[in-house]
Length: 280
Image 1 (cartoon, rainbow, N blue to C red):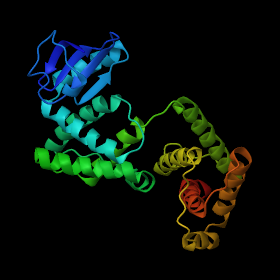
Image 2 (image 1 turned 120 degrees about the vertical axis):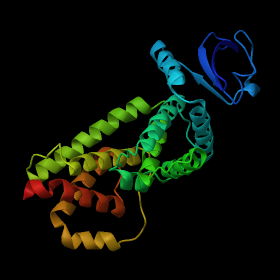
Image 3 (image 1 turned 90 degrees about the horizontal axis):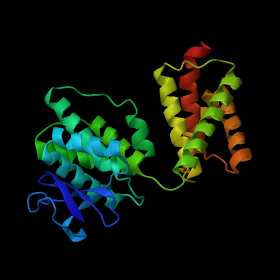
Image 4 (image 1 turned 30 degrees about the vertical axis):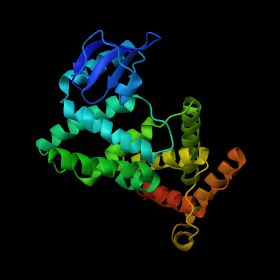
């Protein structure tokens, strides 16, 4: 690969053998080479293919605005993540995570913290990604002598959720949208109500059924084999349980799958919250 521009001591722009524009990242790669030099794969730590001009422009601007050590931190976190996850990651994670680290540290230095209202859901439904987020927070706190809170682990985890992709992504995205629409319609028709789309409980419910739909399509329902909570909700939330059973019937007829009791419990609790004020 031929270097076309030195962006900083750890990041260079280059073209590969097919004349595709790529970004090469590696400790000292920009310091030990100059424009026009050829570099081999074993001299780089990361290769990112820039698929369009906007992505190229955005990355070059990011390099100008971002301290070099944040790129190195992003690379180290991604390297850890790849060891924890079985899925491939889109190249954009390097750009997105570096940009996130830059603004997060800027906010931390100003004493500005953003609450992650979906932290519980991320912990529960994406434990591997949350583990990466916790590692990243500890890594950044130690490396830059800062004090990022646990919420930040959830924010970083979301980047790794979004970066896991495969060829069926577009189809799955459309399927998830349809499943979410159908579940919302079941809830609205069951309770004969209009949901408050501006409420926090609605946002939580939408997030829950999005994660639920992903688990459905990937055959990884939560199932602890513990009936205690299920037996409790049967007594306390009969109408919500009936609605969840309607959703279960829809899942069975459409996908040939049956919800676990754990999944029903979480649906019941979210349905109770999202309909509570509207019903009253």
